[in-house]
Length: 357
Image (tube, rainbow, N blue to C red; front, side):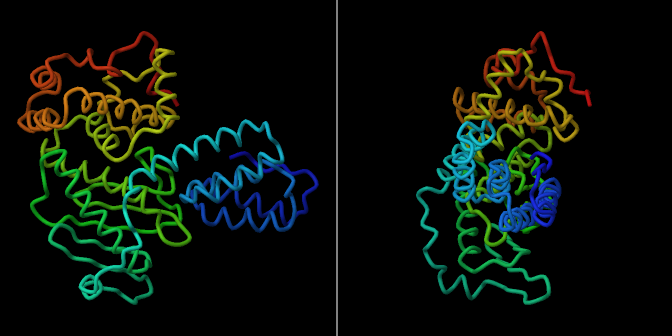
């Protein structure tokens, strides 16, 4: 997102664009969109990069189609804009990836009467809806219609079933899940779009930024990601290495983007993959410029292990870790290979300095 420089644009429009840039930098994407639109009404409609930046803001709230429309306008104004072309390719990739997660779901199916009877709605200043079930206790801290809450519950049931089957484990008591619309005041730590985030701290907390209802496909990916963390914590008793924990969570949550695969391939070709010792540290402690690679690299490792050995051996590995077996020994015992024989875990000759600022 570049600083605004619009030449002869009138001062009020310029003020809106400057505020849009500031709001975007603060991850308040809905507010940024409002300022971009207000500025465009006052002028600067001939500047392609305003539409390209507006598209990026729409991308961050999961409005893929509107973002693509903005990029089409940008490309009509400047057909060879590398920024607009790059963003369009990325958004098309993201849209396809997330849409595949829920492609066969009918989210127009109305909630059953029994569900509506059980749905608890608080009419307070900060409204919330609560659903208590056998498997989870859901609290939506933002106003949502009952159809959306019902669809979220269906996705939780699906996550419980599918991820539980993969890892062979199911929570013994209802899982606490909270969902909040932050308008961007929380950012993702899982290489998800920055308008959404999640964490597991004994319960699952999900946050999203939207002007209206949340985008279900990305909430679903976030939910799966955190559910994997929950099960790994139970199976490995907190002894799972960061790279394996995050890699399994992300690879189960959603497919890798093509752009992520290109970034990984480029890092491998340049011998700039992060070393095993770095991947063993909390990713939040890594410099920002290496954090994304850490997630992508760990996801690729987990993807390889799943495809090569299958989930039964993944489960066995997690149990070994839970019993206190060191990761190097557990890998050897379960997979019959050493850590350095696993793709993307090999030390490379030229490594980036993970402590650089």
